Length: 170
Image (cartoon, rainbow, N blue to C red; front, side, top):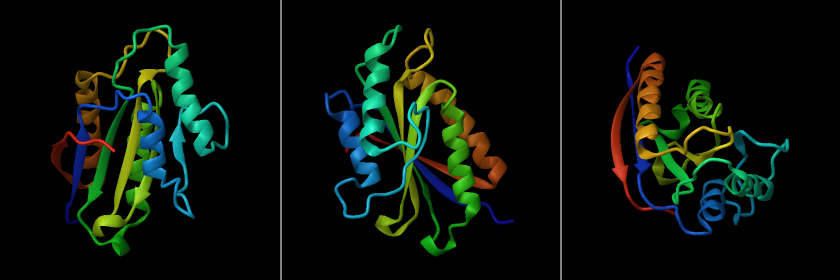
């Protein structure tokens, strides 16, 4: 089996503005479009989630947290596949869902699938505030531990990573 290359873009700064959660969730799900994208998420209270309820729940966890929170409200990263859109299979979706499952025992996470820019990619938004009392916020150091787990997971799926760090946010 030929190893498939994929890239991970990580925003390591930002998302500390009051509307960061609202804007970023709106962006990844294209909520301003006529046909917004489907919601994939873990750590939601209400099921099935709606866009507005998902945003409210991200804020609610921050507001009710008994532990310290970070000024940075979320981490936003992208897993991008270096293949044509028509070559995407169920394996890519299983891999992407398994990434979300790495975070879901401590942090809210939502993600979406995009095909713009000529290549398939998944956007992830992870709350930096844990919904488990006593768990620390998701710092860059803790995110590095998750990155290692993502690399291991990618290897089990036969993917090779190219890492890019970016500093812009949506």
